[in-house]
Length: 356
Image 1 (cartoon, rainbow, N blue to C red):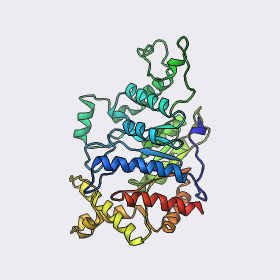
Image 2 (image 1 turned 90 degrees about the vertical axis):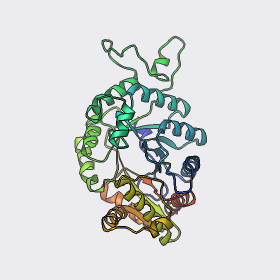
Image 3 (image 1 turned 135 degrees about the vertical axis):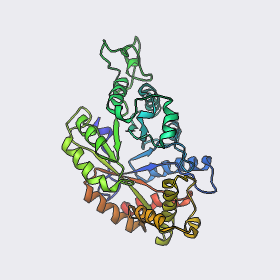
C-alpha cells in the first residue's frame, strides 16, 4: 500500500506538494461559488502537478463549506482523472465507523486507486455542535483508538468470527469479492492519521500508518510531534518506514502587497473565530479598514507569523526551509485567500516556481 502513499515531487520541489482545501466562502460569495472554486482548484492542482487534494470537515462555520467531505470528494472524482483525493480529514468521533467505511468504499469504487481516508479525533467545531452531531453518544475523542480499530476492521472486512459485527459488511467492500460470482478491486483507501499534538502522532507511529501534522495552526508542536511519530514508528503492511505530511498556510501573489492583504484577511477571519464571531472570509479591503484592538492585533500577528506569503519566489524559499526544518516527506498547502482568482493564482504561482 506504500505506493498509494508516497508521491512524486513537482519539478524541483524538495518533496511532493499537495493541497488542503476548506471550500472557504468569502464575503459577497455563495457556497455554490465556493464549491465551484474547489472544483477548479482540484483540476488546476491535477494539471500542474500537485500530488493529492484533500478537503477538511468543519461544522457550524459560515465561512467554510466543507462540512461533508465525502460528498465533495464524490463531486471532485467526477471532475478529475489522476490526482489523489481525500479527507483532511473526516473527524471520526462525529460518525459511526461503519458509515465512514461505506462512504469511502463508495468513493474508492468511483475513483479506484486514488482515494485517501484521513482521520482526525477533534470535532472540527465547538462542543455544542459536536453534541448535536453525536446525538448523545459518549464515545468521543477518548475512544478514538477503539473507533479507529473498528473502522479498519470494516474496511478490511476481517472481524473475527466471534465478534458481534462479524456478519456485518461495509459495501462496497471486500465481501463482494468473496460471494459467488463476486469480483472486487484490490484497492482500499489508505488510512492516515491527522493531528496537531502528540496523541495521533504516537498512535500513527505505533500502528505504522502515515501521519499528517497540522503545522498551519499548531506550529509550536510540529517538531515534537514529528519526532514522536518517528520514534514510535513500527513497520506495518501499510508502511515500512515513516511518512509524514506537514500542512502549511502558503499564499503567493504576483504583487507581495496583494499577498499580504490576502493574508491579513485570513487574520481577521481568525480573530472573529477566536472571539466567537465566525463569519464569511472578509475581503482584503475589510481587513485593511478593520480597527484591530491590541489583543486582536496580537492574534493577527500570531496568525501571520505562521503563513508563508509573498511572491512565488518568497513562498518557494519558505516552503524549502520548512521541508528542511521538519524533514517532511510531503508538504500540503492551504491558502486562506478570499475569493476565487487569488486562491487559484496562488497555487498556480507556487507550482510554476518549482516547475523551472
